[in-house]
Amino acid sequence: MVVFHTTESVLEAFPGTPMPGPGWLWPWTPGGNGVSAFFMISGFVISLTLNHCRSLSDFAMARFLRLFPIFWVAMLFTTLWRQWVGGESISLGAFAANITMLPSWLGQAYVDGVYWTLEIELQFYLLIALIWRCGWMRHITPLCLGWFTLAIVLKLSQQAWPDSVGVTLLWRGLLIPFAPYFGLGMLAYRMTQQRPTRLTWATVALGVLLTVATGNMVRAGVTVVMTLVLLALSHGHRWRVPASLVLLGEGSYCIYLFHQAYGGHIAQHLADLLPNSPVGVSVTVVVMCIGTAMAAHLWVERPLARLTRRWKTRPPQAVGVGRGASI
Image (cartoon, rainbow, N blue to C red):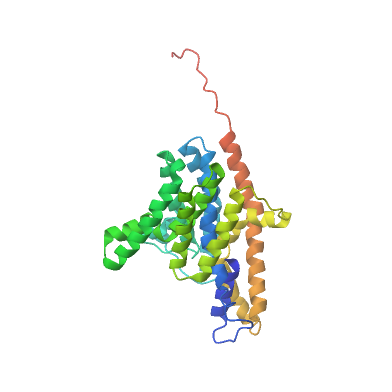
């Protein structure tokens, strides 16, 4: 995703300039489809997380502490960067709406373009929390089959009634465009808990076919590869990963938060300094974005995580009874 957004920004910073290499590098389209892999991983990991939660409040607090503190730091940074470096204006209403991570539902624009995926992610948390609360996690296969089938029905309904408010609300509220990605991740996790049946495999196949039906073959290819990876994990396969990649993985949320708007403005300024080197600008932007993000991870996100972990595990204070008090 970082490379995709960087090459996209560099392309805008060098209008009319022939870019070196093949055309698909500018922008790097495979990276733009990485969001489908992100949603699939989320379906797998959040299912795993809920399986180890004792209550819905545990899940809500864990997700809140994981997502929001560093998100607010990144949003403040991006707002100040866009205003001071980019010369843009962000209204107080837009800033306040973005604090909720659901700005589009409040009629406001995103402070950073990548925030749309966080909004989708938050909606998925609400949906899967409802499934868990109702005790339906053991029925993930028929639920996903129903979800995928509903996606087909609503797609046909959109074509028949394009102005229907009800269809639009169901389309957005039930995350229909993203159902195959979250669903495939959930199904892969379910396979770690029980032996897959023919219905399970048929549901997986339908999910993959839905991604192919979008017409985006690159995204469909990413989905197929990610499905195979998650299925391998569900069957106990493990890979040795270098420590450097583990560190980048731990900081991936920060990298995601600190790259699009930030990197776009860096590309615009560097284009003036290096007018004949789009590749040099691209490399510099990627290095600066990852460097800034990892600094935020090490010096902000990790300390915040330690602080919140201590707060969560703090024993309750004993309540003393004063002299002369009655019980």
